[in-house]
Length: 267
Image 1 (tube, rainbow, N blue to C red):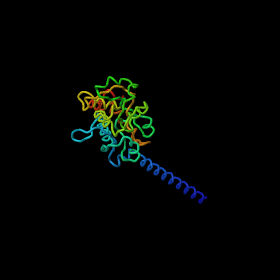
Image 2 (cartoon, one colour):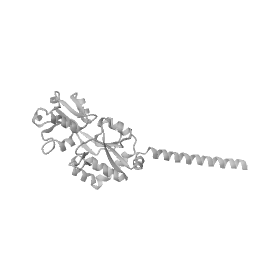
Image 3 (spheres, rainbow, N blue to C red):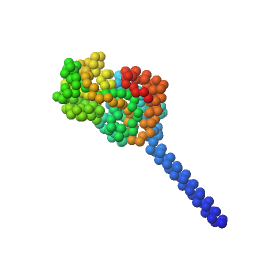
Image 4 (spheres, rainbow, N blue to C red):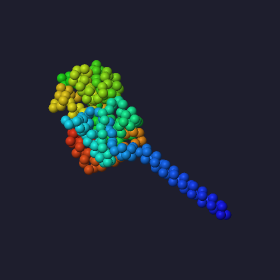
């Protein structure tokens, strides 16, 4: 009887130790898989961007500013880490993210099917559209999509703009950034460009760097989101941050600073 009792106690202890070991292992694996823990451990949130006023651009001192840049800094601060900005080739954003050279893509990114299937995305925070940019003195010639067929376009590679001109079967050249697309039109090397409406409002028309350009046709309506690695817990953390920032008014205040308050989506 004593032998049986000893065997039973031994078995119970073994099972308890195995359960504890499994629990510790599961907790360790969970921590290892957490993007939030990874970012906090290294002390930086690395943000993939392009030069895109009014979302991400440099001030006279070389510091990255803009609605997205300022919100990204505030989010990083809420996590107790430092925001670090890295200019990326927009066409390679998913590869950069999966390779961990960046932790998120936060740059007026349209929530396309490709983006949402390849990244863990935040809730939409800003409305946008893809619009056609042409020289101001030719604008009256291009007021509908049928009038665009003979034009050559410049669009950012991998962008929603490229998706739109491709869907319309228009002739285009892919360039590195939307800012480059504007330069192509200003230089006369492309007839037109397709860029984000928020960028156009800041950079095209009277009082801007491209006073001789204007925008005509809107090709779609879309929404911006922030992308993280698939399965990342940082997406939910950002959703919570967006909700609190909208509630306390800091998101709207930041948007007003850069003139994009009308595009903000209620959180």
